Length: 268
Image (cartoon, rainbow, N blue to C red; front, side, top):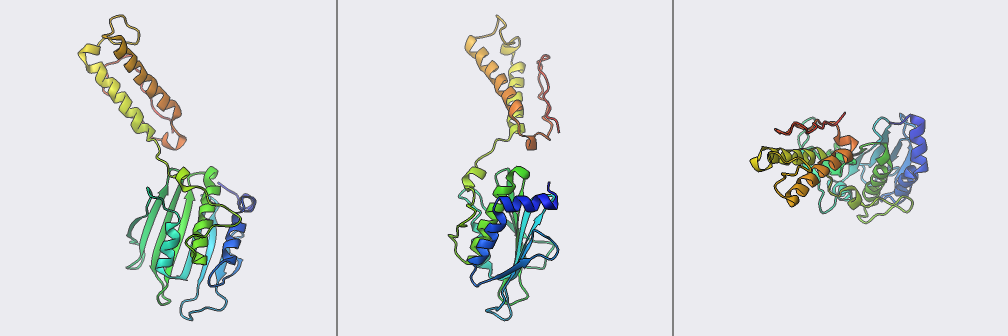
């Protein structure tokens, strides 16, 4: 998806890096920041003078150039503080799905949140070896490069809530996108196309419509003919509008006696 240079350029021009720096400036307790040793675009943050000797805050922000994903990892914040940051990404119709994390030590849980078809959030919360704190991480993954900017802005928003301990944190330099525009209901095009094709097949099987073909003069009724033609037009419109990410499934062939019907298959 990105070369290292292109990723750094986009993170700079979109204001993403500035957004993370601004959030760190509002951190409570105050955090220091430096460049990540293993990634030029990454950041490492930490407490220079830990409030709690046994649970200093430290973490990192890194980016996956291949997927355009951003990963925030931190040790030292409490579980409730992490939950507050994660809730920044939810809406009344979207919520985290939680389950035990089988690949981690007992007591660790992992969650998934789908923000419409364009962004997926994944998190892991576990106990820290440093007292009462949590060892946790959050990854936001865009479906494609087009949605990277929104993904990164949401990461800045959640990160700001985490480090500032302010549930209402809003970045002064990088406004987060409206979640409702990302999580609005989406059409399952393959399912809708299959349903319309099955409906047409049922009509073909009905003796009353056995000879029903478009403008055939023996069509049972004008209104019925118009209805079936509209259903065919709707099916064709769905096929023409199917998004690329849904076009990798082959549509099931309906059991139709309509020899003139074309079998539509989506192309990968």
